[in-house]
Image (cartoon, rainbow, N blue to C red; front, side, top):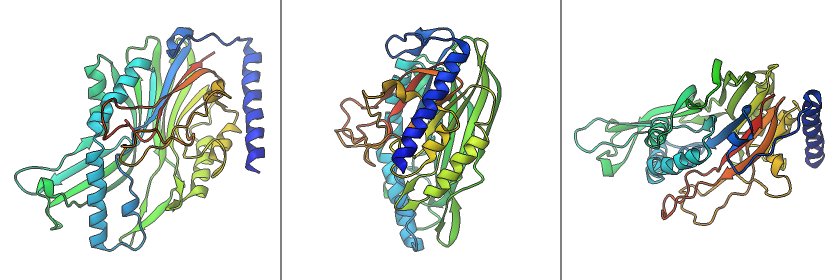
Length: 373
């Protein structure tokens, strides 16, 4: 059944692209190399990148944890996030952005770890991924700003045990808060790119888990901006749909979020560029969220590579220390309606000479060029 869905969605997407091209009498421009800016004055380069929050949250989501077990799980999660070293990872991501110079970037898992001590002396580290990445871009002479920020789940403050920072077992010693965000970055050096409206929000349908007897919602959502690029109108949307894995089996929630996305932020007469981590594999082996969006007359930018590269974008090991890439599925996308994707490529994010972390994220970055009519 999912195979039939895939073929039907492919036909719908190709037909939609053909209809657009036929309506305007447009022949796709030749795009040289990986820099979409060569294609023409209405070719916009976009990127999607899941930054990886730095650790899996699995240890804290096990049903029935005691208070002591939860505190131990938080210590493990925070320790892993410190070890995976986003300040280092951000340097490689910034290098890739410099190489591609996208006009718009959709970021997911733009985490803010806020650790607070209640004692004098060494303090636990806090990491604002957005601030760190923007600083890395600025140091390379790039001029990006956070145009839209969508605020999602915030967990904490919860007790933090981190002996290396003199955060001991007592619950009042140190605390840590984890916050998730989606962000749209805009390249301020892109001439002819103007923003006319922007918005963000969370889906009505959310997954919840019970932690220490209390419900916790992941608060997945979206962000978008409306703009013009050299006179052509468009909407740029980024999203991060719910995960569907054995420890969080929320496939139905994810599929409902995809329907809400189609009926909400994607419902516009403007050309739309959707980027993000859909957590829905392109082979259809788990959920139909990807196909739900395709059936809304979207075209997958990766189809420009059809038959040449599977486009696997996820996922490396939790510690990012695997020296051979373990990307095995395609769940990160650039999907386009009423515009024409002309190229797409992956940035794998390998960090030269670094055993830990060896990758800039557990996800590859995806860059595409889209022609606006």
